[in-house]
Image 1 (cartoon, rainbow, N blue to C red):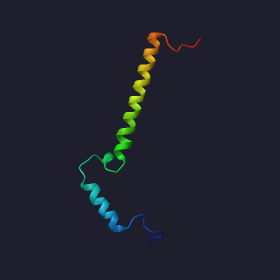
Image 2: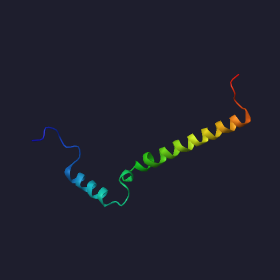
Image 3: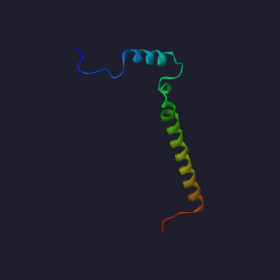
Image 4: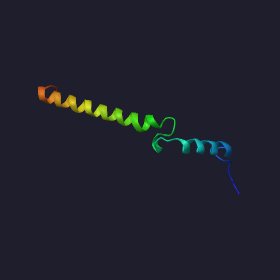
Length: 68
């Protein structure tokens, strides 16, 4: 016996299961916003870290931004 109402109606749940199982994408990219969280954010973090490393190397090689 169920004590609380279901999260989704049964028909909609079956429809979404069929949709996700029919997709040929990888599992972590099947949702609507999954490409943003699985690809976009890591790429942005990698680009930012490479920029900061490059700026640090440039500053060290030119003697810029030293503490007194």
